[in-house]
Length: 362
Image (cartoon, rainbow, N blue to C red):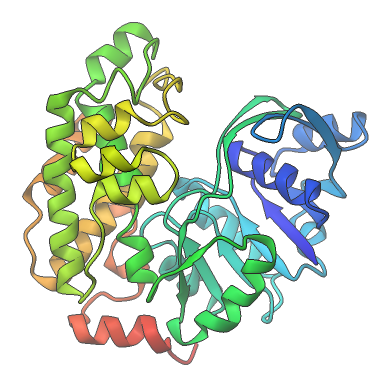
């Protein structure tokens, strides 16, 4: 099976290494011509370390031409931050075969719905979080501390779930089927702890340039309380759409990122303290970072917007969005994944549920 991996960041490198090691025909797309050239100088060798040991593998194709990357692909895996989704989707649109499955790993919140509007088609899947915990160590190397995470995957439209997941599971056999993309979108665990971690540690981040462990040092008991309250609003929104979802700690556990005991405690602070894979990850060097832009605009905003559609109050979510807008001087509600971009503005709850199940004629 040929797999096209889109994205020259941490997730893209991890996916390219993982799938190549496991014998798939992989092409890696990056917008950066310099990055593609760096690979060519090394005969497309990608060095890796971590959960698979230390080694290197040769990627079949590394290119900054997206049409070349996706040509003949059975599966396109988009490992891109939410802030880059529209750019990649618009570039992909002329080249994506209507039968090819697009797997947004992750889709964050509302990612597949936004993609459906841009691509005017279905056969789109999104995971609630990235399948890997990884960091690039150079332009041709990556360290992966976690993989094979059993992420929750929703398909648009949901009526195509079985068919679409049969393709994805050839590459990612551990994915767990969501009922629809509302479920996968509302299981976005990063939206629960990145925004509180960034906003409530803003001074520390700016003063130290991120010289502390984000999850281990930055998520204190008080910050954990905010995460728990924020998560309660997420669960209230999900209940309005008939989705009884797991809480933050349980989602983190099922993603392989904390212990069973921490999950059972329901304490976000403990869950982060007992997250071995995340323990040594440093905070961002500044506030101008995807933990802010992505997890507000492609995390809290769509959750708040879905609450608005369902007439469910989300006061803490809204307050964090407003605080982020004040800190960064940006309008996250306008630039983020709002109801209009998800294609469900003006719908009732039942109409939105029907849309994500059956789609519509494009």
